[in-house]
Image 1 (cartoon, rainbow, N blue to C red):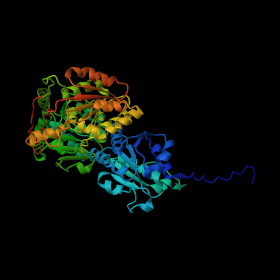
Image 2 (image 1 turned 120 degrees about the horizontal axis):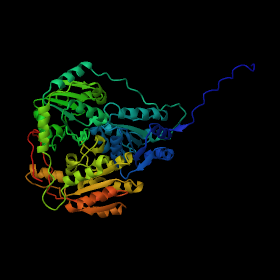
Image 3 (image 1 turned 135 degrees about the horizontal axis):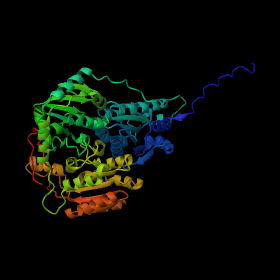
Image 4 (image 1 turned 90 degrees about the horizontal axis):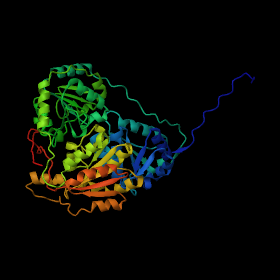
Length: 567
């Protein structure tokens, strides 16, 4: 060969051998994962062996349910899929409630479970469970890896499925032999791509015409606004049209709490102004909501005078419970960007709505010297300002927070809405605080809910997660007690929690700063101490066990039939 001849090309270098576990870790790093919430065990041990070299940080929770809830909250705050991990058998089944919670509230979640080796599957081996079968109704999709070479593509697809369209949880099950097995096969971490979705121009024109002609239009804002990252678009649409709005539990914060157009939460524990506006409107503009029973009350009598314009990314939700006169299936952010109706002439309607909002505004002058929970929560959220993020448990405290806290964004209100899972608040708070370390993240819990995942105080202490906790203690299962009082002839059955532990002492035993508030005069200083604490801190707040959440739409009744109590 002459000196001028080109050199022979070098053969492509064969990839270095990788185990399935190593490829999983590399795939998670390639997805930009910051935190994985998990708990190790035998069937996931090869992954934990590989995890020590990961760029992401593993957070060791103290119960797998806590891992799922923490990952769920991280996802809600960031909009990116949260990741949780557990071993086979009880580890996997302990994730189930968290997976169901994410499915009900459309939170993107990637759940990774170890399993027994492939030859043992189906033999009732030690800690074997068919977790794919168990979770089939509560995931968007699931995979069992059969070859280590498939792991990168599975992970990339899992993240894509979890976050695309209507978000939700997915499951990756890894048999132990696949984690251990080595492969030299080339691999790609690139996610698949969806083609752009077409928005029906005819439906857009019909929607614009209906809005322009409406005399009493109303925005019905759901959690889909947060999922679509369409907060700016919804706020711009509300300003441009002047249309008043109501929110579901998951839609709170989509319009800023200071917005004059927002009439409050609708539904079972919604404001009277919001529910009356729904019942009187002639056009209901549904933005990322699904006509949940807690929002609509008796569905046959819900918004009886209204035509319905329903916009949702999930076409299956449109017409599922209430027929839509105008239906637009598509990404809410994209739809609102091209929906340009003329502003309707609704001055009298807006004046009526604002007059009702002022007339029915909640009062905070409850008699007595004890702590009035709605006033405390209002003052807490106002003291924290726009940096306030609430991770709420389930019960009376959850409804009080929704009614009285000031939310600047829907990313600032985290709660188990569809599933109503007690025990959500503490692990959700730690996940949210890791996602937004600069924010005033506060877990709002009750004595019944708090004790369900109280072990995560150890996680707060280990990682120095500066979560603040407001524990409202009425020594009872308050919401169940309220229903027994109102609808079961005061037959109080199994709601007494007067044998609760000393929660201040318990928190201090975990190494967490804690203090007690029992009188109204202590509230202001207590809020200041809580928010100023440099690390995790718990405020144990004693409240009256007889206090109820008002207003209330009785079960099976129309939203027009609200019950009202005195503070």
